[in-house]
Amino acid sequence: MAHQITLIPGDGIGPEVAAATVQAVEATGVQVEWEVVPAGAAAFAETGQVLPDSVLESLARTRVGLKGPVTTPVGAGHPSVNVALRKKLDLYVNFRPVRMLAGLPTRYQGVHIDLILFRENTEDLYSGLEHEVVPGVVESLKVITRVASLRIARATFEYARRHGRRKVTAVHKANIMKMSDGLFLRCCREVAAEFPEIEYRELIVDNACMQLVMHPENFDLLVMPNLYGDIVSDLTAGLVGGLGIVPGANLGERHAVFEAVHGSAPDIVGKGLANPTALMQSAVLMLEHLGECEASRRLQQAIEGVFAEGACLTVDVGGSASTGQFTEAVIRRVKSA
Image (cartoon, rainbow, N blue to C red; front, side, top):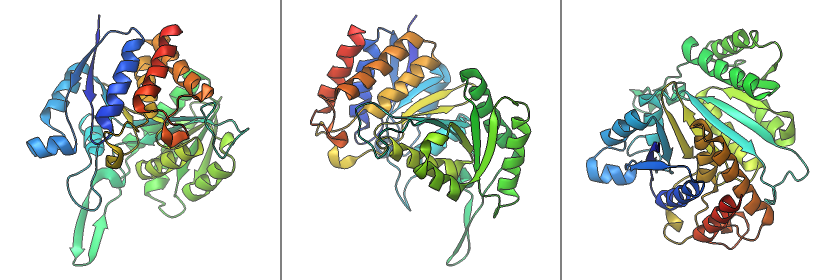
């Protein structure tokens, strides 16, 4: 039977990278019925909602989504679609694997980088609880709960055990936020005690950033609250080539949404310059989640093969190929695998 998947093309270059990714997924031979629903700026212009009911209704049926980038205004305007979607569906795990692609030059040639970030996805400062105390003074509330901290820690350690990963680093600022981040650390320690075969350590977030830049090869799995996760995940993407490369997944008990974590890049819309690698690699995660492990493996190997060859890369990673040419190169490798 065909898999039913909700497709949210997104804004800007979103429809372009989404179309490319759909072609790559279908090239694997996996049968998919796509339910295409709009969200973001385009949906807001039409419906007055950045996250229309149609999106949630579709995901209630399919339980799996593939989402292109959406625009989030800075400092004003409509709220974040990403944050709203995570809260509505309780997608409490933000899962970001960061791996080097052979053939893609980075600042870390000769260094093996293969790490995964587990970011708590539902609370912290992203709860959006803000108010103006008096004119000129705004207060934002940071919310950390035992329930959310325990379940993100458990998701991290369970993944480590299932996949033979050996080290978990909890990232925090408990030297300053002794109650909130202190609670997060206590929960991580509690869960770590149940997994004695996995090395556990803790790093203050600023030190963690420095260590990641100096010695990224020393890291395996990292777990952290929402805000630090947002920042550190972008930092680690920069270690391997940028946000146009790395995949992302939002996971809950009942639903999963796989997404490109880069922006909507309105300046290059329609120019054939968009790099679909991030969303394609997110689709690799999606196929694995659906149990289509062979198709997932073939798509990942095809992407890696195109990069290793280096002859058909998009402009942002040093090539001259268009979105379509890169996609065709990936599809050829998928079909010949």
